[in-house]
Amino acid sequence: MAAYIVVEGNRDKALVEKLLPDDLLRSSVLVPGGGYSGALSLAHSLAVVRRQPIALVVDSDSVNPEAIRDRRSRALEMLTFNAGSVRCKVILAVPELEVVLRDDPCLLERVAGSSIPEVVRVRAEAQPKAALETWLRDSGGRTIQDVLDAIGPDDVQIMRQAEPIRELIEFLRIHAASQVTANAAA
Image (tube, rainbow, N blue to C red; front, side, top):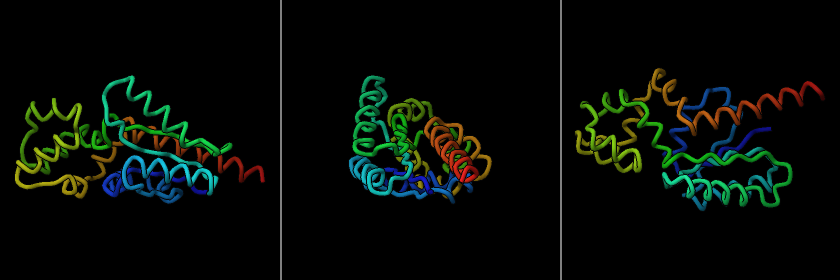
C-alpha cells in the first residue's frame, strides 16, 4: 500500500523528489496539486477514495504562529473529513518549501557564484522563494531550477534536516514500518 504525498506545485515535487531517500520515494506516489487549494482538495479526495495514507506538504505562507496553527488545523480538518481511519499528515513549510534551500547557503553560493548578502538572508526569513529568486537572478541570471539541478549528496543530507522534510521522512518511515508489521502478521 503506497503512501501519497501531495504538494502544491511541480517545483515542490521536484524538490521533494531530490530530498527523499530512494526507498521512500519508490514506496510513495508524489503528486502536485496545482496550488494550496488544489493540493488540499486532491489530498482529501485521495484519502476518501483511495483510503491510503496521505502527507499534504504545503506552504504556511506566514511566519505568524497563530496563523500557522490555524492553517494546519483547518487543513487537517478538511483532509480528514470523511477519511475514516486513513492516516493523514499536514506538513507546513514555514513560510515556504524553499526554506530548505535557504538552509544550505553553500549550495546557493556555489550556484550564484557569490556570497549571500545580509539583506537577502533577512528577507529570506519571511519570503525565501522571492528573496532567493531575486538574488539568483541578479547574481547572473540563475534560477531556483539551477539550484535544484545542482543539489548533490552533501546538500541532500543538509536539507533533509529541515523541518518539513524531516517530518515527511518520519511520516513515511512510520507508514513503511506499519506495512512491514502488517505483512508479517498476514
